[in-house]
Length: 415
Ligand code: HEM
View 1: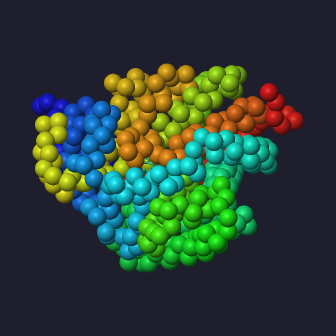
View 2: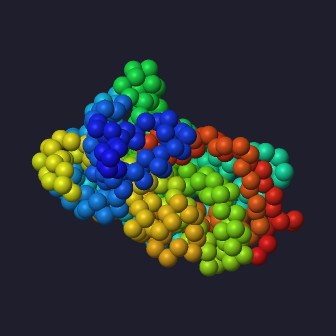
View 3: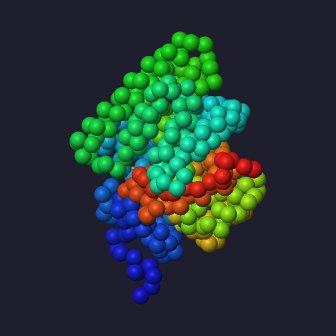
């Protein structure tokens, strides 16, 4: 029997939450890449869908947005149809051009390199304060003690969001990102409540910023942009949610993933600590590659199309598995290895590809590099205590909790 025949006739369902909670998906994706890289799964919690698992195929799909649409009108950008969620978020990530391009242009200046540079100082200060407050030798949860407070502080700075209310940000973001709760009416009502609360608060702040002279924060920029100025309420909520979810869970889960990687590859971590000037940046990119905080994006075929010998029908869901492309052996040899010296690490697809490529990539990298540099400066050793608690989601690839113990250089930072 050939390897292809060994695959189930109805396709492999790689979307099942338990696979992600157990971190058990690697062999299934390796099998798909090898034997049936464009695989049709007939039955899943999310309905039928195509899995695209090789690097070059994802690039090809994302390079043809006319055929493979992101629009919410066809169901949007995640495996779960957006029409099926109680509240519909009109995010420009889930729009096609020209509307997508206009909205993207309005937000882009806020995350331009010149703006990011301004954030570097406050970011380093916060990172230092958080690391120096961690308990030495006593177990604590890295997710709630480091990843969440650091990313929340960054997003609050980006929006100039009231500091004393900042803990609302991850709460709202987590609910907005819960796409795999299915049609459950109770959970959807709860999600709706949080999303409306977020919308109402941001609308207040938006109106305040609109009435005031322009400032450099994201909300003020949106309030004074002609593209956003007369946006309807749903599109406004969508744009905010996108920046919140985009900047929150993703960066948070990269910071948490770092801990799993340095525990798996202690020699590589020792090398980073010895020469952070040479390796911190590579360590950050490798962490983002291997974590792949957004495991997939979805497109919908706008016409019947032949793709790698398969016929994808108009209306079919096409799921782009970045976690798989990031381990494609033809691009990343020994792809599961965390190698801060890897030469082509930056080619990873964790930020997507093409017209929707992540707007916050540089900001995310800056946060992670800063964290790694400050950990290295303190000669930090962070050891996991037991298995991490992972999210049961094939979209947000991340953690609920990682219990660790930590040691650092006597007398705090050095270097
Ligand atoms: C490690 C952290 C991050 C990861 C892994 C990530 C991942 C992604 C991915 C996969 C996409 C879709 C790309 C595509 O469809 O080709 C995306 C889009 C986007 N991201 Fe990120 N992101 C991160 C951080 C951020 C941050 C910090 C922000 C902003 C503060 C942000 C804002 C956005 C926006 C606005 C889009 C939509 C772009 C568009 O549709 O044109 N992201 N991101």
